[in-house]
Length: 106
Image (cartoon, rainbow, N blue to C red; front, side, top):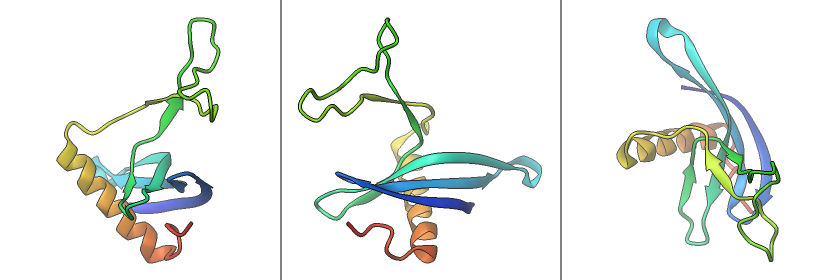
């Protein structure tokens, strides 16, 4: 796995977005962009697959919280089980922090 890029964007638990190249068959990379990197108030950090805002039938963005106005997101891809997702998250965090030690800072 290679880090393709890091874009800082702090909002709530969000710390930013990473781009990744995963090596797959015949050493050809699968590039994944805009994977969100989060850090919770308890210090736990995680990386998830990219998502997209949700739209209603009238193609208006669905808001999950009327107070904050944050859009509701839906996953664009996901791992088949929690163990694999956790391993992916840990590997990405290790790679990210090796190149950007302050990535999880507020």
